Length: 167
Image 1 (cartoon, rainbow, N blue to C red):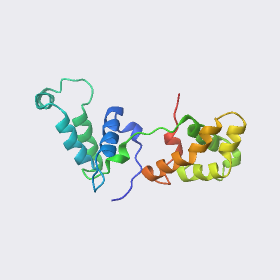
Image 2 (image 1 turned 120 degrees about the vertical axis):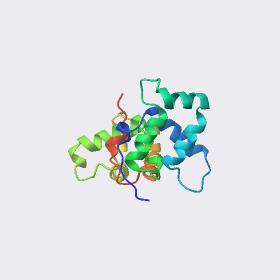
Image 3 (image 1 turned 60 degrees about the horizontal axis):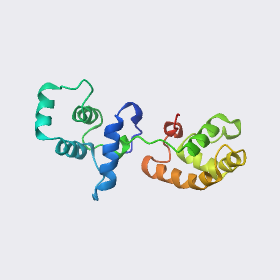
């Protein structure tokens, strides 16, 4: 299966993202979870009377979970990896690091990917931010672990700015 970078923030509702993440974490499957498998699980989660009424009348004004899944399956295929559609935001500390790497000329040679931000952390950007009081020292210690988790899920080439938390 090919890894395709997907801007999930415009493709999936927070509700469906949370369901996919929960299913991925709760199921001990040998194969990665596909959109088709999520569609099956969502179908089982809804009461049968609700599912039938939903199919016939579409009584809610917002797009329903089954409709949202159908649209994703039509666009990306039933076998697309569901985990790629999970929304994820970086911690405040990692968001600060990403914004610093993106805006500070010192880091202009570092690509703004997760791997590039990891390289910047190893080069001392987090220590400098902790020294300036922009992030806590305790947060500095967890940045590599957080980055490694994001890299494992989304790949080294995922654009880091897609994970920035805006508050």
